[in-house]
Image (tube, rainbow, N blue to C red; front, side, top):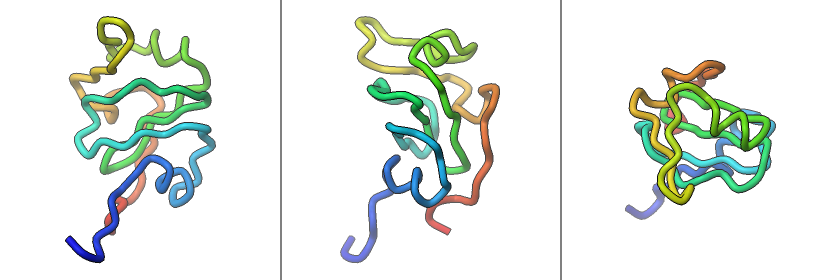
Length: 92
């Protein structure tokens, strides 16, 4: 896979101009490690959702915090969350 760059949340903060201190990327937008700094963003292949605070993330309808707070599950994907911002796919 020489020459192929890995998509990261940090890269998308710059590319998409997301005002986040921490961003995580998952192509399908359904499962993430927890955000550690806020504002924080969860990104997928088509956009992102920005959370101003940990409380905003943990109380967002459709976001489920795993046991011990070690993971986040979004069964409908982040595109189903309020405030989702659509962007061009990061590979294109």
